[in-house]
Length: 436
Image (cartoon, rainbow, N blue to C red; front, side, top):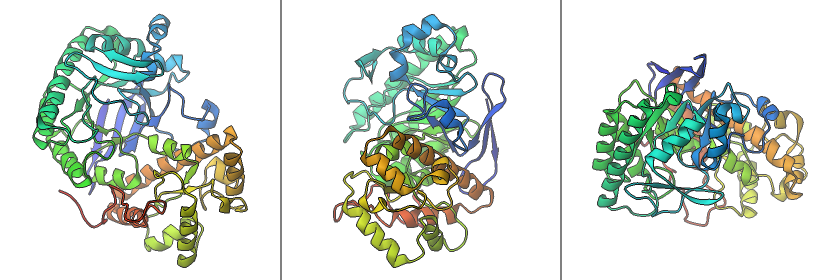
């Protein structure tokens, strides 16, 4: 695995090359991973996933699901990639599932707790590496104490998370050297420390001294850390990391959040956000066409030419929105007003769903609880999200990231129409304001 960076204003443009068994795969940067559940893209078969354009070269597996298959994989002996029917896919194994946060307070100096279908699993570094030997991933996140995301974390607890994580990392690196099954695998070191800058910097510096293949910025998911603090921490941490290794972040998925992190030196994100949007019965509808006149681009992307009509439709859409997590980047297709809407989910979209089906049809599938609704929405949401990352790279290539950011924040600032009066998103802010 080698990181190839090209000079670009506002972010790290390039690629991770030499991936996979033959070294022929590459992941364009900034980029995202393919979110999977036990190796399968949610709602999709391998054939339907092939119909999605721009699927990333690297798939994310989550350890809680695979840990329950440890004995099976150990007996199988050929690794998870072949076991799940994706022998040519580059696999990254993360410690947690971003969609299923863990209960807090169960980590110790010797173990980290994971939560799967069968309940709690205590993971020592030795047991963790045994499971990785059975999985044989291309990359894997080292076991770490990331239990610093819920509520206020004391300086003492943040220091403990760093100490434990570095201790776990040292043990795992020693075991990695003695594991012939993992000689082709890259270990990703986790940067911990909660919202304490001093501990974050210590974690970054100490992890960078060790022979890891990349870095994971952990503990930034959720709303426990205020936006300004979060962005300052990310910028400070990436400034301490070597330029020649990739930086991954977990738990960041909304378009405005992604752009803020890219400006601060993050390379790789997860793609759980399209799955969450799908589960809400929604379709991604935001524009990433950053060419001149961004306001007109937003209206055109949503198939609306009249600003007053657009606002009225959003207000009407907000009336029936029940899920407080719905963002300004999506439309809620269970809403009754879509039952007679025979346009595509998104004007101009080239995905399988938009080329063949209508909003009215997907609305019907959702209200009748048909499984096909999840399939069609997942295909659309994945392709739209992957195309967004392609637009980010294009904007960096042509030094237009500011225009793209302005467009995305214009849409974010339309506000979550489902929010209660006075309620604001943690990540909403002016596109012209940058935290150092």
